[in-house]
Length: 383
Length: 174
Image (cartoon, rainbow over all chains, first blue to last red):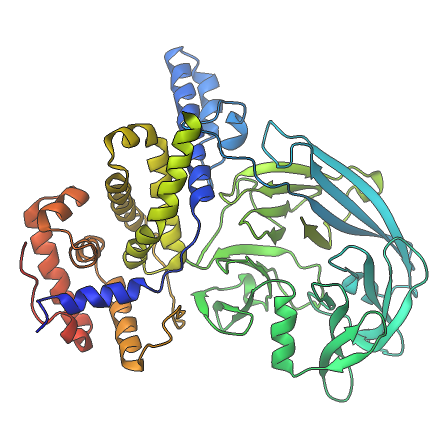
């Protein structure tokens, strides 16, 4: 016979088996450092109080206030690292941000802003970013076409670019799939009646050899196009959706009937929280973090365009919007290590790298005159 | 010496995180919140590592911080709002459906307990702490642990009668 409560003990142990083991070392060290910096900032502020510098104190204390995230980093970045040791050097990070600029009614100029760090990793006050913008190719299209700008997509290896030009579809929602070398040269037609609307019309496979597309025909067709030959292979919608999602990350999300739901690409492990879009408009989930914890939701999605702005980033563990030290964000890219790159409304000339704790790790300023006051990048790739 | 401390802390995190996460998962009912909780507790342990290293109480300190942080987070309302989806099954291929259903019921019932009730249950029946040890971790009296345990078990019976065989009798005090 079991001892009293042995069944409860085994039930709890069984339930605890559901948690997945994760490596928390780096996260713990980051949090430790943040606590140390905050304590140092507070100590400095208190010292100023003791010195009678009330006006200066108000400035010093600003670093510790406001918002869900702790913005103490920039004010104290030059301070000595906390004991017992500084975190080890992290692997080098880099970012390639792709922009386009409309030139007249018939041209798109592609650019890439390359972000690198001389010391390998963005650390405020320590590592200078090396920002260089390079002009890529020009895409020529018929006057006032919307398809090219909404569909242009660079392959993961950064070597090719694909877009759709409206051909014989008077509605302007589909056309010829064009693929070209990103540095220039003649574009090759690799498909017809390929749809160009939505937040991601064309999705490259991770090996940069094929593209997931939808085709406009008598019945909606989805499949994959071989980038070298143009051969189209139709797929079952469910398999296509899973594969297309996996090409961009392990999770997908939807907003429906007042609920934001995130699942794995195959539809399993659903996690749902209440979400009411502003003005009750249709909205889309623009991105989900690699661990499924955070989802960025668009502003009104009635316009079938990729140029949707982020209305909120939702923490799927609490259902609450995430606060950022840079204020409201307009564009969000989630990175595999939990860090983010964000753009903010009203400032298209600057992006911010945030570490996994939400702190600003680096600012990325657009350095090329032609791209000033243009749109935020349409795509980003991270190393 | 600094490198030695760093290596010892890294070893501590690597070896103790899985056990800490298991308890944190029972406290929070959520993978991400459990990670946050353990991460925060480990960060505070790191801040005090030199002292803890000398005293040899690192794990006890980390667990105590974890429980205290969890109570503080509850007070701030940092609890998973709605998680209606199926729980991910990891490595439980041999689960019978009945056992899986019981597990879901237990998880749901735990999430409806108060902060202290859940904490005393996890300490007493998952970590197998005595009432005195649980009282020390939570910073309350033994009498409070006893009363919270009784209330928690009674509430479990009311919330999930199907779990009756999990708590056939109140646990005897040790």
